[in-house]
Length: 288
Image (cartoon, rainbow, N blue to C red; front, side, top):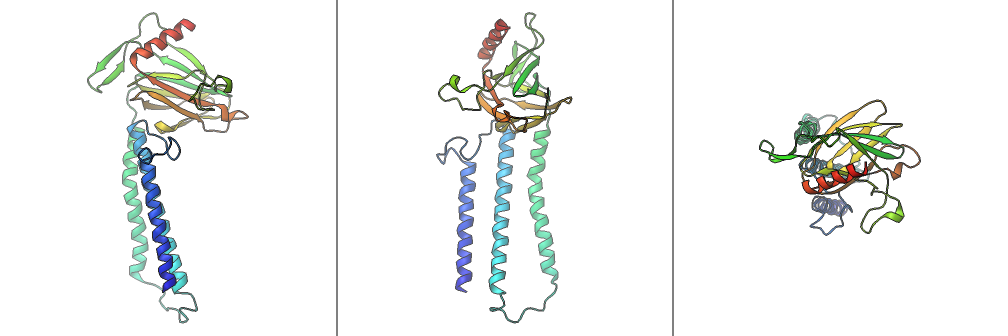
């Protein structure tokens, strides 16, 4: 009996440890953890929903593992041949069989409900304000601004700045190339192997449709803080739409093994205000 209590105490301590880790994952800032040390920051409500769904399901899985191992340990101790020399003659039990059938079904059903709502939010494809074609090459990215606008008006339907008509002196499209920033040119605070020589600049509040393809081999355009990851396949265009509700610099990487310099194919997106976006436009057009 003492051994059984000892094992139960160990499992209770483990469950408490799992609860503490779960709390840290959901509150990395309050726990005084360095950014990205345990978790990434969700940049959009959909990404936040994905993150919490992941944490909750992993937490449920951890509890299930603890319960199963606890039952196995109890069975090994209580029904070991020295402790139970006369085995039970029970071969079936209706209630037990119903229990181990219905309980997993209920657990999966409970997990399914938030999964469906999250999946619907991810698959929601509203009309974009800006269309960009992203092309992966060995080993850099090329961004083509296919539809481009300079004037902004306040859209009452969505209540955020929406891009509108082209003015005549701006071309219908232009492109930039984005290579990994070499080490001697990195500035203080810029992350190595994540910073690029030319960031993809987008206006705050824009809804952007990305048309992703490849010019040579398989790549994968991944931006974790936006819950975005889409394969770049030669001869095929995959699309997704993302919202950029706040300013900041967001990093990603190619997530498909694409050759020797696969690890030096980062993604850097800088979301700026309307005024700074206009300045960046004029700078790009003057260079071109």
